Length: 169
Image 1 (cartoon, rainbow, N blue to C red):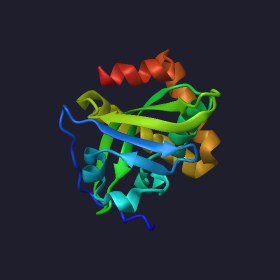
Image 2: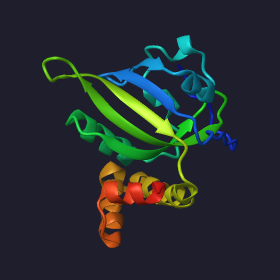
Image 3: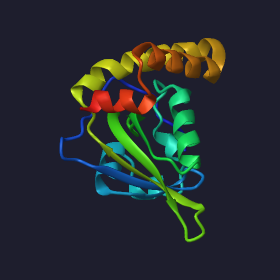
């Protein structure tokens, strides 16, 4: 499935909306709740079995997804701010929590993501940081953006999780 061209039309979650989705261990969508389907603009059958990355907006730095995948592959949860791309080229921001679901042997069965509306504070800060990370990535690859993210966190004297949670308060 081809990704749409992004356009400057933002959609907004309501404060009490929760987007829920599940992917298999390879990131292919196996479930999405009604709000997920509605916000994405796709039909449920169009998303079933498709890599979740179909919703990845080009404004998102790859280092955020590397961090996400590194953490969930280690069976650790992660919180992040993500800009998603809709079928019609619109976009929406989410504050997401991703966790691994384990089978009876303790192996990863699938991944579960719950997303909600990000805070106004986050929406004032994150796009600028992501723009800088993306620029670093375009100049020096994913390692350059990861180094910039680490430096930003060190300069602020916080861990990744502390920084993310401070923006969602």
